[in-house]
Image (cartoon, rainbow, N blue to C red):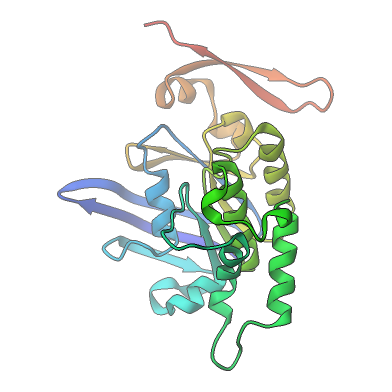
Length: 255
């Protein structure tokens, strides 16, 4: 499903947190959202998810305007995984993943064997099925992140919004997660800090100071002048002789 936004903005206490962001993400492609800390990536994801009621602008899911959709219908289309997910409830891992089925349940369609199978499959895809009976609070940060991703998969969305999902994950699980995301038949917007990982996305959007300053193919967006200007790093572009993939070696700029 195509995801698009027109002139998104958010002002809090007179300060522009996000200003005039417009973008379009084609169906079944991955847009990497990159930028320095405080550039507006997390805020943009929340606006795309419809979680900021005082936001300006419009979001469209396919041919539907989000503003005209019910929260249940939006939740059937979009799953959002934030950086941190806290709860004061005494939940087991399986309970957390089952929450992903909430948009699909009703008094006439209660939790069923089919829903249980979907949750079990989501746990298995994230490699956390062995944790199903454990307490959510007992998990490490990386385990909690993988469980939240399993919850999002159980939601069966057409659009997946991810805010730095590789945080807290070791390198093995980082690579496994990025491979899983690339294989999913969904539209993905993913905020990333690792610019070399971001090079694997179909498109990149660069945020700076609450504004979108560039959007396009990775090799055209991550130019050496932009790395210096936005990220304040020097870089050398390297080519892996095994598969010709491009990577950066980052260098501190001289003050």
